[in-house]
Amino acid sequence: MPEHRMTRLSRRGAAIAALAMLAAACSAPGADEGSSSADASAAVSTELGGEQITLEMYAETGFPLAKALAEEFTKQHPNVKFTIREDQFTVIVENAPRVMASDNAPDIIRLPTMVDLVKDGLLKNLDPYFTAYGWDKFPASQLVQLRVAEGGRPRGTGSLYAMGLGYSVTGVFYNKQLAQKVGMTAPPATVAEFEALLAKAKAANVQPIMQFNKNTAGINFPHQALQNQFGDPAKIADWIFQKPDATFDTPAALKATQTIQKWAQAGYFPKDANAIDYTAMMGQFQSGGGLFMFNGDWESATLDKGMPGNVGFFLFPGETAGAKHVAMSAPNTFGVSAKAKHPDAAAFFLNWAHTNAKAREITVKIGGSSPGGPPDLTVPAAAEGSLLAQTLKASAQLGAENGAVDFTANATGAIFASAITPEMQKLVAGQQTPEGYVKAVQTEYEKELSQ
Image 1 (cartoon, helix red, strand yellow):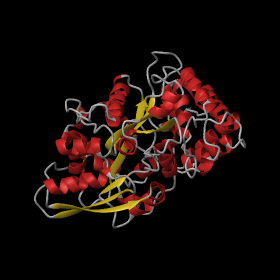
Image 2 (cartoon, one colour):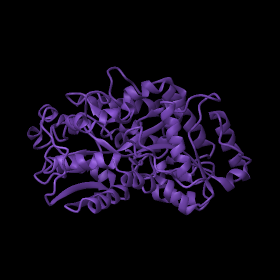
Image 3 (cartoon, helix red, strand yellow):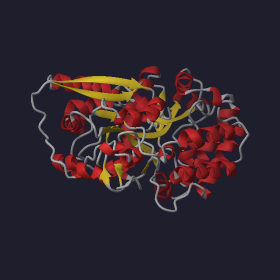
Image 4 (tube, one colour):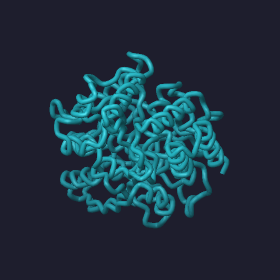
C-alpha cells in the first residue's frame, strides 16, 4: 500500500501499499446477503464482554503489525483469541471477494479493494461504530480515504467502511555515506535540486535511485511523487476517488511520465529495474546499492537495523523552494466483513488499536507509522536521531500542510496490475512513450468504470 507497498503496502498495494483499490464489477456470490443500508442503522455494542471468542483475521504476509497487535490484544483481553490467515497482497486482491462471500468470512480483513466490496455488500458499514466510539474526534482527513458513497462510487464521501492499522507516509530514503560522496549536505529543496543530485551521483559512479519494478511498478512511487508536484493534487485525488469527469490524461501526469522516461534514459534507475522485486530492492539499498530509494515509513525499523546511523528520509520537494509538501499517504486498511461472526468485537479491536497506549506504541515501533486516532493522544516517542523519528516528523509535517494524497495505484481494483505496472515496465524499457503511457492508464480506468 500499499507489492507496491503493495508488496509489504499497501505496499501498502501499496503502498501499502497500500495499500485500498477500487472498481465496479459484477456482484460476488452471496452479495445479496450483505446490506450497507441495514448496517448503517444497526444497533451495536461497544462492550467486549467476557465470552470466549476467536476472531478470524485475514492479513498480509510480511506485514507483522497486525499479528503483533492481535497478540497484545489477547494479552489484555484473554477471552479473545485470533486465528490469522496470511497471504501475499496480490493473492488477497484475488481472493477477498470470494473469501468474504463465503460462510467462513473473516471478522477482520486487510482490504485490497473497497468500492467493489461495498457495492457487493461484502463490507460492514462502520457508521454505527463511528458514532458509538466517537470517531468524529479523529481528524476527518484521516478517514476520508475509507469512505464510500452509496452504490460504491465515488470514494472519499459517504459511509465509513474501514479503519487503518497505522497511517503511512511515503518519501525518499537516502544513504548518508553516499550522499556525502556526491556532495549532498541537506535534503533537496526543489525538484531541480533533486535532479542535480541524481546527475552528481551518476557522474560519481553511484547508482542514483535503487527502485524495484518487477511484478508491480515500484517506479510508480517516483512517478506519483513528481505528478503530485507538477499539478493540482486535488485533481489526482478526484481521479483516485472516481469523481465524475476526472482524468489521468493531464499535463501534470504527462510531465511526470516524461521525467521518468528521462531518468530511465539517463541511467538514474537500475538497468535491470524490471527484474528487481521489492525484497531485492531493499537488500541492495541496505548494502549500499543506491543513493536514493522511494518508499514508505513502514520500512523505518528495518532500515534503522540494517543501516544504523547511515540512512535518512525526506518528503519529496516541490518545484519551488518553500512549496507545501505533497506525498502519497494512506492507512493500512482493515475492514469488518458483512458476514463477520463477531463484528462488535472486531470494531472494538479497531478502536483499541487507535486509542490504547500499548497498541499505539506497537504501531509506531513495529509498523513504523503514525497510529492515527484522536489528535489529543500523543504519538509514542521514537529514539532521538533514529530514522523512525525522522519519518514520524515527516508524517506530522505532511499532516500540518494537509498534503496527503492516496496512491494512484488505488484508483480501481485492477488499474495497478492491468495498466500501471505493464505500461511502466514498457516505459522504462523504451517500449512505450510518455503520451502512450498516460492514455493507456486512462483507457484502462474508463474500461473498468464502465463494467
